[in-house]
Length: 454
Ligand SMILES: NC(=O)c1ccc[n+]([C@@H]2O[C@H](COP(=O)([O-])OP(=O)(O)OC[C@H]3O[C@@H](n4cnc5c(N)ncnc54)[C@H](O)[C@@H]3O)[C@@H](O)[C@H]2O)c1
Image 1 (cartoon, rainbow, N blue to C red):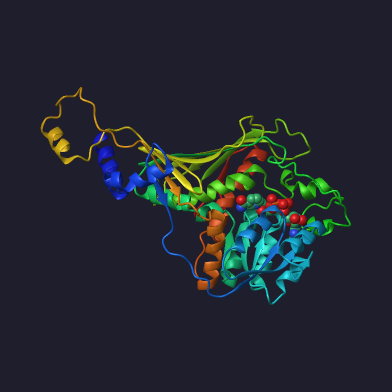
Image 2 (cartoon, rainbow, N blue to C red; image 1 turned 90 degrees about the horizontal axis):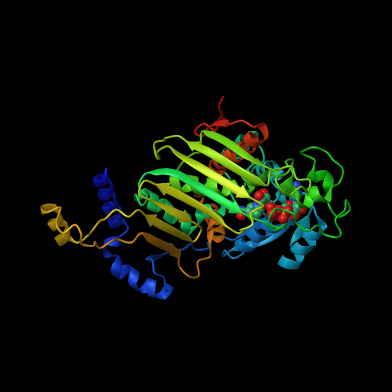
């Protein structure tokens, strides 16, 4: 066992070139002032802007606006129209992006415009499916925010629309296009952590805005908000400003911690491991503190069984989210294997390896072969236990890479990282985790055929 471990360690070290690390690492280490080995990660090659792409934004809130600002950094992208159901957002859009953009409260008016090539959908979750399907059928390419859909039954229609129309469709879990996720995928494949057996993700939050108690604009009213359209595809209720501006807390519109946060980790985990998803999903949690009328838990644990597949061994995933965490501010994704672990962010991977002794010194190795008991008390030269891969300074980040990936696919009629099938396989276990919590029972999923089991 030990022998196998050591030989796979050696082969991994060779693959990442650590045998010659002294020269490769030196300057970076000095520059970064770090005591652990550090490698910079960067992209090879860039993209050239060929055709201009006219963009429209549907749902001009926090994330839609942020996506649009990022998209506008990509050469050749122009914003021509914005749709939102709240007057204040439309006025902000004109202030931010210019008076000449077309604004409307009716998303179909965006879809019938011949000058729009692609749309970003940044609405609350309960509108993702309908607008995505309508947009693709209207001939638009779509960048839809995560989670791709609001309910488990909604996914197949989006997949079908993508297949029927041939439009480019990307889901907005931007981490999957990041240097960090790319490096983690490469390291896992190279055997850096041995055989994967466990993964975990965690979010800790505490401040009211972080946990979805957003400020409500002073002018919020049925005159400034198109409430009837907002609830037209779900339960009809009288105007409720909290349900509009703090939609994440209500199941008619949002998808709780699972659809909001867990889905990012499913996307990254599936990208890094090549997995299609878990087979068994169970949740535990409760509403412990934020008794503000919310319908979703503020502490949630999700446990997920990934079965063996052709590309990965069986492993377990544990996801945790705590909105009453006094430590606050921590988020991580960790993959654990038989020989080490990786902590993964969008711009950094910290690889920790176990302490099995190994030397790349051929003289020493030969000596050990002939006299294995030679001077056992003598201290050994040890390889590094922790290696940090960090993005080069000036890296534009996962959000830029993900939108650039979308626009490049449009320009080249190529493929995106997170198409409708990928997006559904990431959303499904998140949505089923909610179902497990509310139904108080494990959920069974067939990730290959994307259907419920049992
Ligand atoms: N990728 C990420 O990191 C990330 C981060 C935050 C949010 N998100 C996702 O982005 C989406 C929006 O989240 P947010 O935080 O920006 O919410 P938000 O409330 O700030 O923005 C939503 C906007 O959509 C508008 N809207 C609602 N229904 C609409 C409709 N039918 N047509 C047009 N506009 C409509 C609202 O008026 C609002 O301005 C969600 O799906 C969320 O999960 C993704």
